[in-house]
Length: 151
Image 1 (cartoon, helix red, strand yellow):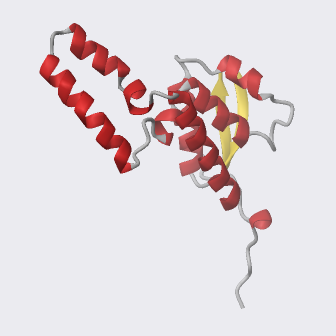
Image 2: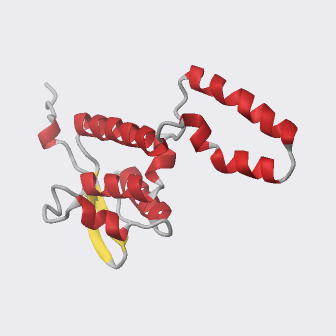
Image 3: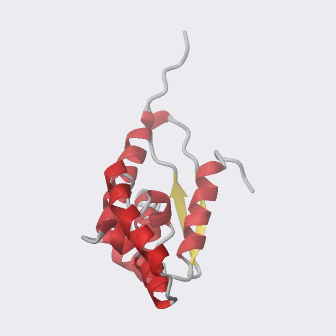
């Protein structure tokens, strides 16, 4: 008979992420916790966009089109945005949100709770910035895709 592997006995993938000179050991979570974190990030991504939804997500593009006298393109984009909402596509994907300061900090916090119990979300948010958030997300992604292999 084969061995039954429970979430508690499963091999944990972990690695080190450096943020603002601090080292954090991040972990791939058990399946149910990974699903929960994914749901939490999706809700936070939707909240980050706010009430404007797709219009808020495309604000910079819309402003640029208007400022550069591209009225036809502006109208085309404005006509497309309500249809995007009908498709159920989120205004900001979870992957995009993970690369923002708020998303990278939230994921880092949840992936370090068992290895850095002393770390607080507001402290992590203070060191994850617009400048380093994409790198933090990249480092976390590298750890999660290494499957326990060393670099």
